Image (cartoon, rainbow, N blue to C red; front, side, top):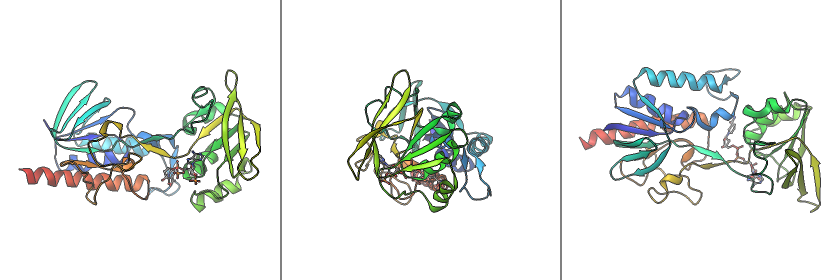
Length: 302
Ligand code: NAP
């Protein structure tokens, strides 16, 4: 029996573990992939306070991990299959663990474009991670889809490798922050194909072109390219919680200001919960609040 189980080892889960460890709670953190989660898909973090010029994401995560391990938090690499909110048990591929409170920090996964060819060419030209795959596109022509901060950051990163980076966005305006838009405008290798959507990804053994529809004229044409990077937002990793805690229509967990979910003793933090801003800084803030709330919940139970 642990005091606390934390599901997910991204910035939110790791910060929750840090605060739990410092409160001397017996804490188990379960992560199915690598510690760090989705943020590892970005090479650098430029807006985390205290690091002028940015910090490598891998460096920030390994510092967080070290801090947590020094406090004696147990970290297991397993996939959570089922959760019993009333009994506070977590079933994983390795068995059943029990605790007095649970924090969900399961994060989110890349949203799919859902066009013909996307699935077929995933890993053969279609990618959701420029940091992982950009070196394969040295002097090649790539397309990147979306208009948010992720596209802006990854387009600049890809332009270090590719011969041209072509952003396809469904509207005329991007929603990326102005500082990132300025960086893109200054980059001669980055081009914009606006008010347009991709209707198909084409190829033979690997990606060779995308079919693009101009939403203003309605015309469709093929655009030759070697790679397609998709950055159109994220979906919460909350399928294992369906019907157990209150969520919005997209599956983001609804929490109050102390990160409590609708189930007693179950807290949530980071990108899996519904909120207005999805950043490392407030994922960490959420994690601290969730751990504090879990501590107070356990103390009140006696
Ligand atoms: P996002 O901000 O949600 O933007 C998604 C983009 O994809 C939007 O431009 C959206 O278009 C477009 N889109 C959505 N569905 C689409 C579809 N089916 N077909 C074509 N386009 C589609 O997502 P994100 O850029 O991946 O970022 C996710 C979160 O992480 C955000 O909260 C973001 O601020 C944060 N983040 C922050 C940083 C940073 O601060 N440095 C870096 C990376 C990510 P519309 O604009 O028309 O809706």
